[in-house]
Amino acid sequence: MPEQNARLAAMFREDAEGMIELLHLIAARIGRAENPQESIDQAFRYAHSIRSEASFLRYGGIVAAARDVERILRRCREAGKAAAPDSQALSDAVVALDHALSGLEPTSASDGSATVRNSLAEEAHLLDSPLDAVRLERLRASRIRGEQLFLLRCRVDEIPEMVAPRLYLVIGNLEKAANVIDTLPRLDGLIDGVNRIEVLCALAGGPEELRRAVAVDAVEQVEIEPLDYGELDPIDPGEYRSGMMVQADRITLSMETRRYEQLCLHADELTHQLAEIVERDRGALKSLSRESRLRFELTERLADSLATTIRATSFVAARTILDPLPTVVRRIARDAGKQVRVRVSAADVSLFLPVADIVRDILLHLVRNAVDHGIEAPAERRAAGKPETGVIEISVEAQHPDTVLRVHDDGRGIPAQARGAGGSLWEVISAPGFTTAGADSDASGEGVGLDVVRYSVERVLSGGVELESEVGRGCRFAIRIPTVGRPLSVLVARSSNRFVAIPAAYVFDRFVIDMAQVTRDSAGALHYRYGDETVPLRSLDADGVKASEGVPLHGLLLAVGANRQLVVVNDVVGEETVMRDVQVRDSVFSQSVNQSVSLFLPLRYL
Image (spheres, rainbow, N blue to C red):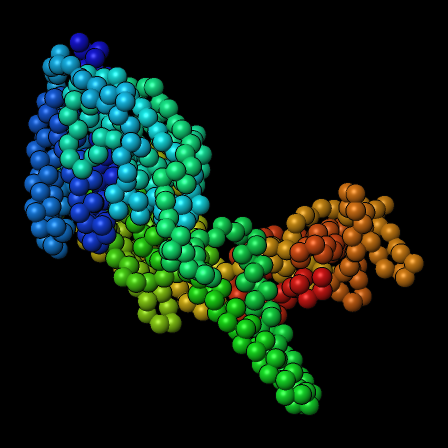
């Protein structure tokens, strides 16, 4: 039996960690009143499963913590929603359950002699009964998104007390990997005496993703059957409306970053080109016929609308960046033996997509540092008269013309001896190589981190950082990011005696020029044999590139649509992200060479 008990304990920890992560996410959804009844039912299933399994294994502390979660959920279920106090209480109760699991000390277990009946008879199937309105709407939403539809069946071969938790874990994994439309048996309540389950789900990927999701110990006989939407989703022809996507309030497009950056550049350039025509040829425009003037004015409006639409649809809600952070923090804290609660606030703030990626990295660096260096271990916090659980608060707010990120922890603060002399506190701790970490720290403290944050904020985003720290009271970071301008990936190259930045979205290859591949046509134009094709060869300077003896020239293969051209330069400094003010058309500031450089846009020449 000891061997079996050890296996069951390991299984329980795996199950409980996965379900608690889901409980954290669901608690956040309940707090935001997103599908409250469904979210409450989901959370209740996971809490009950953890309590049942912990009771079987005689983990009293976990049983009590899970019961507290159930008590709050029961109150929410009766009210049909979670009032603000219950929402906070639920979040705190899930944190307490997480902490109870962290301090798990296994005891003895029973022999599990009960039997499990297979209540899903062979003739009973999920597709035998029609879907209700809620599940039919889920199905249609998945169809509109273009997802594939699958029916998954599996069986759990385990002692009775462990079956239900295993099935809940399977459903939890599937809910993270796919859109679960329906299950048999229905999981509205509790599963009792069932060891088989059927799941109707849809996802953008294929069956291999579903197999990974159910690759759980004791789960056997996994069958995945692709289905046709037409069999399950009858649509009344009268619902179709001419010229409209049926029931599609929004669509999602997938686009390579390279294509997206090209689209932004093309829209900006179209607006600039039309503005230049108006400025340079104002008199000639007045001489156009009335019909031609109206067409030109319409073209201007369309160009402006296109640029505005691209920018307006290129934003992401800040909350999509913040929501995963609590999960990251809990995992880091758990590994470090610390207890941390995360509070997130983002209101209705949105971030430009390329900026959002940089902001995500900045926040990850800051919360890792807060957990690793700031938040103390429970015993140290008790000795300092603090609650055992540390708190990290993260917020994003709009303060025109900036977006402000704030990260505050209630940890130990920055030690006085680490502050150094000269310069602000931020300048000292963000200097390359600065660290306060011990040699045994895995999460951070390798002399990098805050210097990366500083570079991203100040150099890439042209923003600034304010830092306040009080020993024993924690740190407060306030990061201001201008909302004007947009990040642009560029390749900085030297051509003769000047530097030039070329948008990386147009650069498809770079290599040392082989002079034997250079040819000249009958008109005297230079070309380069590139693989099986010949492409035009040009210099960025009117006088051509002056090569140094023994130093090779470099070629950059540029492409705009089907048009390709090879640009020759002396050397490539490197690739970097710059902030481009769309009102400043022909130059950007390069951190690589610490000066303003010309911006070369191939679309003007190709």
